[in-house]
Image 1 (tube, rainbow, N blue to C red):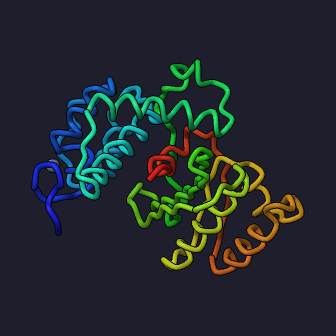
Image 2 (cartoon, rainbow, N blue to C red):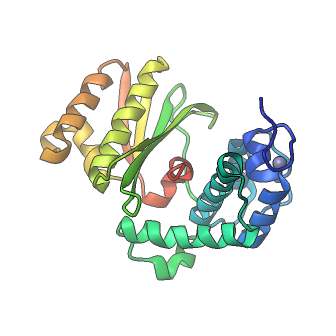
Image 3 (cartoon, rainbow, N blue to C red):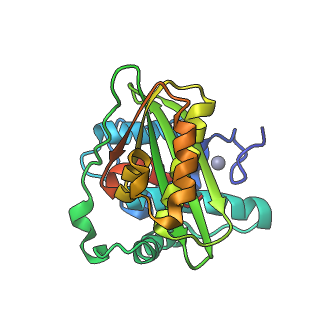
Length: 253
Ligand SMILES: [Zn+2]
């Protein structure tokens, strides 16, 4: 494995996004308050779970975009030999949220403090698995993305994927693709009982009742429903957008 492009240490997701001195500086600049129990982590996903457990209030959108900014800077150093100022990385992260909210029709960008509450992710029933799905649009870049995070009843990560789609899709279409990808991932992992959780109520109900699917997502829903036949049992669950933060974390990778 290659070493960290910034300091040469062993590169893990925990090092690059959290422990490396550049990351540490960026997190300081971000103004996010971290609980004292959050220390060095080999994997960044473990840090998220500690945050969920111990942090009182977290601005998860800022958290996710800041992590993404650090990763993007790592790629800039690796491929172009340039490194942004830590202040700039933190500032760009805050600006990215504004852009993301505007592109995805959030109308509460001026009232974000109200939404800085602990996200509520509930584990699935015993023996079940939860698949959090998320679609995202990046209008400026003319791209879309899908994120899938798969966890068991204890919150343990069973699988995850992040895929960039090189053309712009609508919010509904990207969510429908995310659902299809999530279902395919769970099927390939051989899971028996799954809850598909997403923040697009239209997609969630179309999976249950295909008559409810709009024409633009009909094909995707049909394909998802075919894949769902592989499971012993399945359910869908619609959650508010910020509850689906685990899937949103990688939405901009
Ligand atoms: Zn480093």
